Image (cartoon, rainbow, N blue to C red):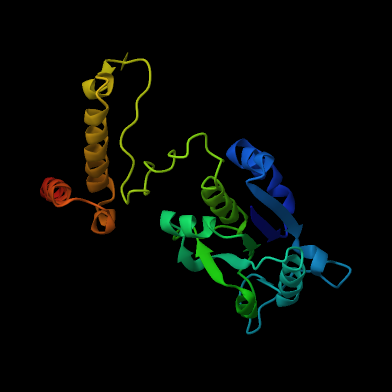
Length: 249
């Protein structure tokens, strides 16, 4: 069972997320164990201070190293299995589906949430992986930590209703997901494609595959270079990208 420990100065924000929907189901099923820790528990002054002004001057505050060092050591001792320590920060490697799948195979993760102008550089000496969820700045690492936890928890065995549920999702093929429809078959003069009503599963599978390629070519052509495509599919994708480029000229 995967254990995820989260260290934050705002531990109270996590329970509504970890206890709801698929994450709550995963925890109830015993597929994953969550533990959220207050970084302030490892401070040594009466004000429980976790930040200070940066050396050299500048705006904002920097999170102090001592609480992080003490917290990581204490949390590691809670479970004998080796842990990967992850720091959520804008400078880190961008989280993608491949990395989520890699981390989902871990036994233990300890996730550190920074705040303010970031963490003291020395904290990085106890970190195994720095992760970002995109090229933008947030007020802290709590929301990115939730994104990370969600992305890997749903990949744990037994969490989703179907073992095949994640195989056709966006990015799992290296492609965006194909269009999805449900009842009614016609709504506001918009109809579901006939192939999806045909009952011919082979035709449906082919349609979905080609629509996934079409959507990726139109919206995220950068993904096509690493997507797993047959020669015929790659020719089709390249034609779509070329047609799109000509329309944009």
